[in-house]
Length: 315
Image (cartoon, rainbow, N blue to C red; front, side):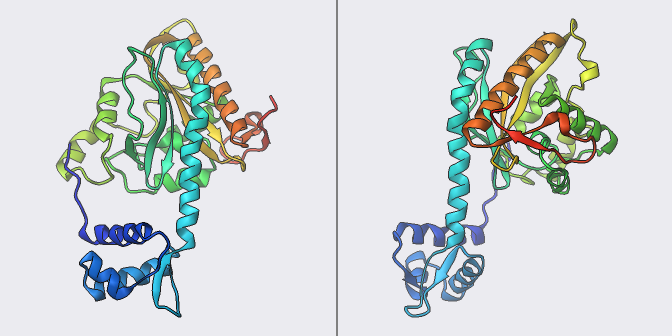
C-alpha cells in the first residue's frame, strides 16, 4: 500500500486549529500563535485570514485575537450526528448479525471519505474495523448516492476517479432504477472486487502512483458492473454474493447511512430477496429512530431522481 503523503501547508492549518481548540476558548493573537507554533508571522496571518473568511475562526476587532468560529460548530454537529447515527444503527444490526451469523456495518460519507461508523461482527465472521476509511470517488461509493437525488449521483460521478473507470451511463441508470425500486443493492462476490476493497481501505484519493492506478484499474471495467440486477437473480439458482446494502434516511428524506449485511458466499436468489427485505426493514427502523423519512419507493418515477416521502412509521 502506498505511504500517505503529508502536506506541510495543510499540517500548519491543522496545527493552528488544534492550538486554538486546546486554548479552550481563549483568544490568541497573531504573534503568540506564530511563536508558539513555530510559524512565520506572514504564513500564520495568511492561514488565519483564510480560516476567518471561511467562518472557522473569528477575529475580535477590539483585542485583535483569534478564536473558534461558527463553521466549526456546524461541522461538529454534522460529525456528531453521523457518529450517533452509527450507534443507533447498531441496535438494529445486532439481530441481523445473529440471525445470519454475518458481519453487519453502518457507514456514511464523512467529509471526502467513506467511514465505517459501527460494526457487529459475530465470532468467526470476517473482521471489520470501525473507523476504516475509503475514498469517496469513483469507482468507490456508488451506494452512498444511489438512493439520493440525481444531483448527488452526478456530483459523485464528476469527482476525479481514484482509479480509471469506464462510464456506461445506460447500464448505470438501470442499476440506479432497479436498486431504488428494490430498496437494496446486491453486490457480487468476485476475487477482483475483494482485492479492490482491500487495496482501497485507508487510501486517500489520488495517493496511488499513476502506474499502480492503471494496473488496478484493469480490475474495474465499468461503474455498477458488480451490482446484480433483479433479472439476473434466479430464485432457485445460487449466486456468489459479497454483500447486501440498504439506506437509512434523515429527516428530509436524504440518504444518511448505508447498512450492509455481508454474505461472502453463494446463495439462492430467493434467499437474497429474504435477506434484502430483512435489511430494508432494519434500515427503515434506523430511519425511524433518527427521526427520518423513508422515501415512498412505489412513487419513484424512473429516471426522474425524485421521490415522494412518507413518515418512517408507515408501511
